[in-house]
Length: 359
Ligand code: ADP
Ligand code: MG
Image 1: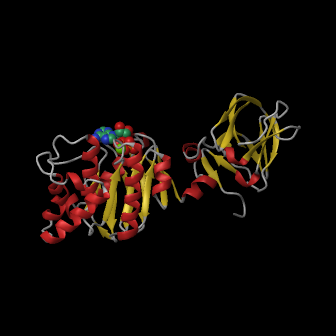
Image 2: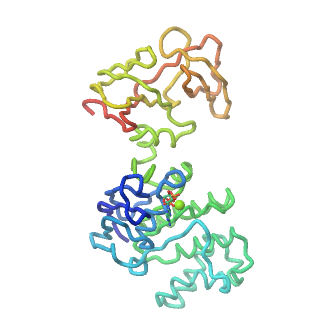
Image 3: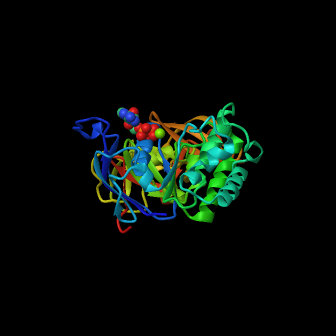
């Protein structure tokens, strides 16, 4: 097991990158703590696989270093890094049985046959394939093949890290939940450093202790689910995580007051005078619809009942504001203002969060 350090790391697939735009991975300094379970979350094309493949050694970075427990492995091939990686699409040996597919990484390392037998049984139980151990992989469903891939990734106990690149994409939803639970218990049992790539926030938030959010080739925030919820470091994090995501409104901010489309809002904390494009971020959970003349004037567009609560879609001068209301809340026509709970308001300058003064 290892701590993994990325030092001034960057990658471009182009031979002569010039601007930032030419980099699939922008310069990055980051530590992955030994034994933690991380989710790497971001939309398609933001650089997740690029980063994972650099850690495993499938890809050599155009710049920077990778250290395992402070040892430079940048030039080492995958085999020497002692890493297990599971890909989005199954990689199985069709002519081998399920058993032999699972045993492969252990045999490769010359493990004891008795141990192999026992360990393969354990893994087969985890992925629910004990009954098919004797079958050839050829002819199995994509689902089953992906489970074999996953199992092969988990079979070795002595790896430095386990990397999963959207491994459950082709798996049906119920099995997904079950396999994710298995991965979590594997983590508790062995304490491997794990990086689990996904574009699905639910998957990320339920799997990991720490979620690393990527956007456009950058890591924009690393934090606990609570940190990502309460203090999104970048408007993208606020928008991408949460359902619906954070409301983002253009504002002028001076000290502890914001001016939004002509209405003054008290912020509760001081922010000086942030420069650039200034915005206020407020999650729907921290808004309320009221009657009266306090708050932002809005028009209700529609109310969605999603079971545990209601989502009110309102319009404020052409910008949609989502408000969360309790399931039993009575939404009356005279409720034409939205107010914010200042505890849940964040200020952004050029998309990055401005910490309040004294914080
Ligand atoms: P993700 O895994 O988050 O979907 P990737 O790391 O696969 O993102 O891709 C990041 C960016 O790099 C994308 O713009 C993608 O088109 C580009 N890219 C990925 N692989 C290659 C490649 N082999 N050659 C050129 N460009 C690539
Ligand atoms: Mg990918």
